[in-house]
Each structure stands twice: as structure tokens, then as C-alpha cells.
Amino acid sequence: RDGHLDISGTDVKNWDEGDYPMQHGMSTILHEGEGSIDWDSTAYNMILVNETEAFIDVHLSQRPNDPFFSYVALGAVHQPHSPPDVYLDGSRVKGEYPSSHLDMLHEVDKVVGSLVH
Image 1 (cartoon, rainbow, N blue to C red):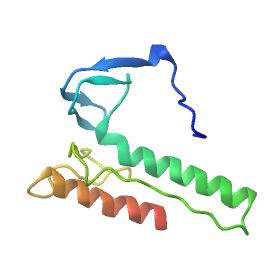
Image 2: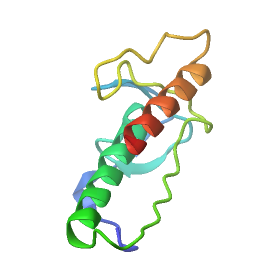
Image 3: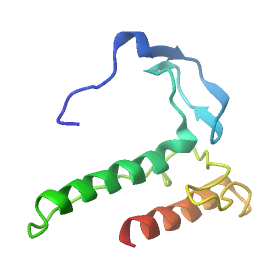
Image 4: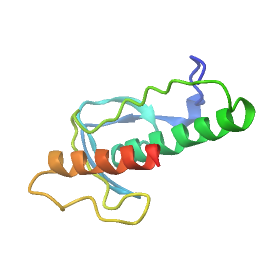
């Protein structure tokens, strides 16, 4: 977001290490520290999809003949492996494979599919 933090001081809290039930599943905080009061590790990749799609839509509407580059740093290979219960399209993610890491890789496939459609 142009190199600027877009959160006010009242929207920040100190998170303790642990698991927290959130809207999209069980969010995991690996280390104590400050962060957004609504941080949800299970929503990370879905947030990236929504923001990337919004960027592409604006770019295509304003400069349809210009190329663009979008670096989308997905969180699937990084800990914590906290997959969402379901993806944006309503399909199940968590519990589809023997480990949460594999569930996250399953979500990466869904994310890439969403972005290249």
C-alpha cells in the first residue's frame, strides 16, 4: 500500500502465542507480538486474492494496454500452517489432506486458479 502502514494505533493489539478461533478457522500466532486486532492467519491467502484481483481490475480498466507485474507472496509454505475451513468459493480446505501443510498447498492451487482465470 505504497509503503505506508494503513492501520491506526487503536486497531493494534499485543497477541500472545497460541491458537485463536476466527471467522475462517483456527488462526495460529507463533510468537508474541503486536498486530492488527482482526489478524486471521487462515484468511491470509484469501486477502491476497481479493487485493490482487482488485489491483488487476483497476489496472485493466484504467490502462488495459499496459503490462503489469504482480508479486503475490502466498503464505502456504511458511508456518504457521493454519488452513481456512473453506475457500472463497465455499469448497473445503481444512482436513482434506493428512496434514495442515498439505491443506495449505491445496489452498495455493485454489489461489493460483483464482488469479489466472
